[in-house]
Length: 373
Image (cartoon, rainbow, N blue to C red; front, side, top):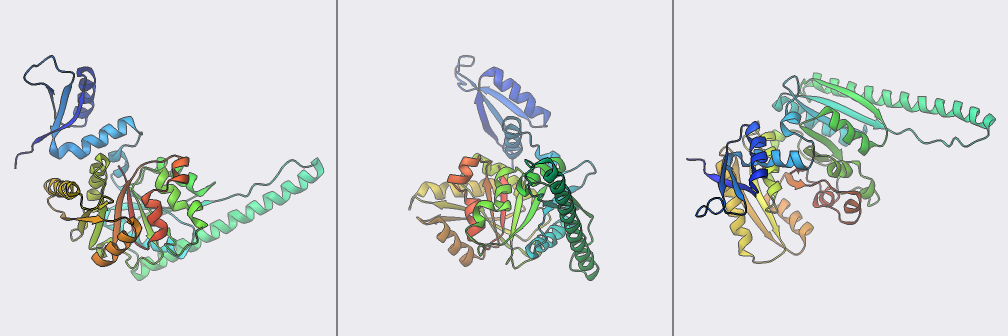
């Protein structure tokens, strides 16, 4: 089937030429035409058109140049040609479960695993009289050394457990290492992510049984909204240990341009997994809106052309209660992973307008695959 041309943007001729050079440097074929083809040279702008198959890559290039310095290809493959998976841990049982899923992913993606633990050094006041300050400084240093020793014991214990499970066949034998960082967990995880450039982050969570007080302070929720790397949140009660056991994923779409980029990332992560069914899902608060179903059909047709090896269908949910309807859909349709797009949000947005990913993280025991469009 011939690859048709689609309009990426309409710009002035000057901006169109700049964008054209950027896209062509990424091996994307570009066609530039006057908007008014009947009166060439007098239109208000020019139309930049590309092959439909290049659309996800082109959108990613545009987003990376204008919104952040993240380059998908740079993070997806590293200098030694292997992908990287990052697993932040806190030495809990659900952290070990996250490690197991990450190791299994690493086997399929030919990736290496980095285990990260961030420890906190409590603040000690220094505004004391000199004699007391010296005494307090000695106490502070001793207690800090105790913290370090405890952290080293815990990471060694975790590594011993992993090695034992590898020898027993529970974990696959993949290349892994660990790193320790001091600071606030969410901040250090985000900082290390920028340095390490993983293809995906895998983090364990308590799931829906955690207390409400954990909602504000959840490290996983903060990392989701502060980083641009795909993140898989694994609740404590997740029934599977390997994505090969996943047969049905729901991809939530809001008909946003960012969903094209996110779905392309999803398709790349799922390349080794052949039997997964993906349901393109839209939650409509306007009951009976026929346009939503038309748009879903269109997106399904587009993705079917772009990714012919994927098993795709679609689902429209009419509801006034999003979380309740999602719960019913997950249960009734056997959804094992919920994939969704999120955008980077500032502190006020995170405090006063929780994202759907944050809501689902504390509401459901379904693993989340959060993608940055």
